[in-house]
Amino acid sequence: MIKDYRNIDFTTEKRVVKVGIIDGKIDNNHKAFQEIYSIKEKQFSDIIYDEDIIHGTSVLGVIGAGYGVGIANPKFLEIISASVLSNGTTSSEQLKNAIIWCIKEKVEVVNISLSFTVFSEELVKLMSNREARKILFIFSNGNFETKKRILPAMNNVIFVGALDNFGEKSTINSTSKADIYTQGVNILTTTEKNSFSKMKGTTYSTAVITGLVSRKLQSFKNKKDNQVQLLKQFIFSESITE
Image (cartoon, rainbow, N blue to C red):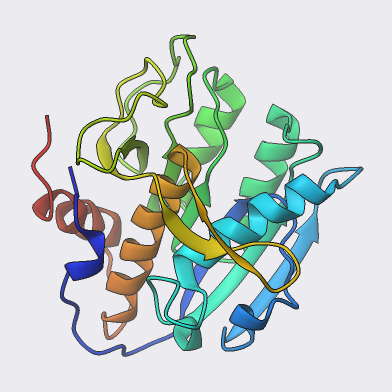
């Protein structure tokens, strides 16, 4: 568990890191995103609702917003935003196409704050291909989900659960076991109309881990061949897993 993610020491930023976010559409006009190095967007969903934009915007806020809100330094973040949410849901096909795009864009980490319990053979094969194995995929473990997750163990995929205010596993967690847990309540982040709010859910604990990983990547002088392994070592070295 990572209970105090704000007090992890990092070395100075050395390079811009490309981070994929597969979620709702991002409000890239938010004042807290103006320091971000770049944001590239692609829409995969047909219809976008306000709640989808709030969700995507709040996820990016945790990862790397300005105003001291985000974890990673926005000036060293290149965001690849794949918009897949429509009224809070997406499909396996849209997720697959978004992952294909992120791989083509050569991202180093992908945040997927969406709850999936059944991963198709096609999707597993995609995330296991040569280029995808260079990417760390960080999935939400889901809120209140009771369906058993069906996915073979994959070295480049982790699932994140939420801790409550007391550093205990929150009751919002799904029944599936996460690989790691971190704070998932009272997370200050960006929301609609240039505002900020405190949010809760495994969506946000997932974004916390992505923010930490992105910040760690910014401290690397260049990409490393065993980068996924190094990132996992970093994540779990800062925690006591159960």
